[in-house]
Image (cartoon, rainbow, N blue to C red; front, top):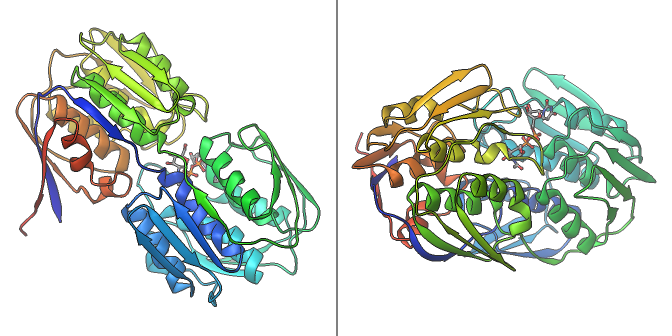
Length: 420
Ligand code: UD1
């Protein structure tokens, strides 16, 4: 077990390059098993969740190696479609293997997925979509068995634009017979990245990034080389951290168009942002202004994955701000921890009423999930004094050596082993 120790109160400054997107890399790694041979993926972040996905691929019989940001996956030796229970419970994204394994074997056995404890996180939309494509599903307690004699294209309407369900159905439809149309599909940039990867392998998909995705079934796929998009949530985390510390930073290798809603909100609270191609410069020299209302919703609206980080900035703003969370019901766990640091936040159902305070103070706090942990890091960077963050394995799921990243921007942050 490890903890982070942050000496706060230093404005961030300098420039860094942002790593590849976890949420794009995970479904793409799962999709790689649909084509026999060796794939090479570039810009893959070195994260705990990526390590779990590579281990699952190995357990299924693939060869999978990561060297820096390059991952090679040889799928020609895959022999199993049974996802190990213990790995399935470590990471919800193991569910992405359903579609690809059904395509390859016509059968998959898995368990109810794990992941961050941020809400109920059902998988009914994944299962309904697969059933529409001709998959028979049996649930015995926590075990789920899916079987098909041949996937068939279908018209699928998603009751909610679930990111994971859109991706799973897209993958299962790639080699189905006929045409599949997904309506009310999620529009997140990671879905476009998955479409681009699948098409590079030989799939025929259009529409990702809009709410209607059309997949024409193909009979052959081949392995390929592919570059993963930059991580918009890591980018956004750094932007908010710069604003909260009243710093000035430059982020290279980013996709500004993936962050339109955050850029809009930050400008409204008085943060200066300059954009050119794949570079974002952020500077904040004055206290942020409060904002009447920010509501999380599916892309392109404000992302739930940046809600906790923005809340730290609003905790330091001049006035009252309201944040409403509409995606996950359990996503305010950072509030109690931020209160230990002096924040003034009241939660009522799915809204947080954030009354800005002039400053936060260092404290010992606990990362309860991935993005809550990122928020505490920002709070620690902005706070006066020393902050100790425990349970940082949650943060390592989504940020590649977060202390190194922020130290390159002038922070004073160190990782220590926890003696038990
Ligand atoms: C993905 C992201 C996660 C992000 C989330 C929302 C990955 C690996 N993770 O998660 O970081 O926070 O999108 O932007 O890409 N739902 C159902 N039934 C289902 C599926 C989902 O009711 O079958 C509900 C969920 O409980 C949740 C909402 O839909 O309330 C959004 O979930 P979804 O979009 O599926 O998120 P994930 O794909 O799990």
